Image (cartoon, rainbow, N blue to C red; front, side, top):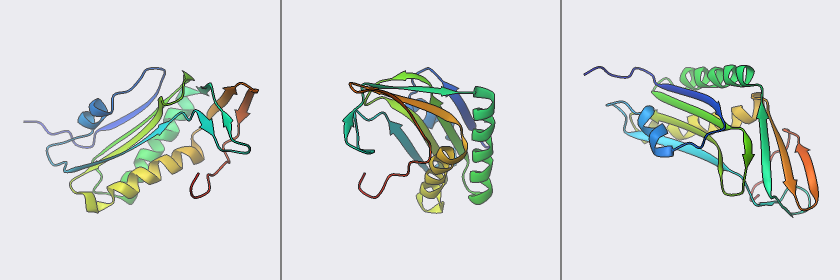
Length: 155
């Protein structure tokens, strides 16, 4: 049976994604662990004064964003050579609270080989170098959110 060498999924999409489908796409016969980070749209935002969010509007220049996402996948494999599969998917468009907006998943042979750290690195790096614009809309109006916000512990 042919074996998937190093499956990679990179996408900017308006479509919903299925975590089980993503997992199956980055799994090989040697996979024993998949670590997945899924970022959701919050209905209450704690940045500044806590406030309600009705929805978020995400936008991206797809060719540039996907190129940077591929760079992140390459960086993950360079830092954690045992990582087999990598998926990085960012949704764009209007997304409502409790909706998945981003997923980063990594697969490896075992849980103790850096797969947790690789997924964490992937989302942190995505926030750092992938240009995705986010407009927050709520009862008080709308605001473009700058990317330099870093949550403090407990937020």
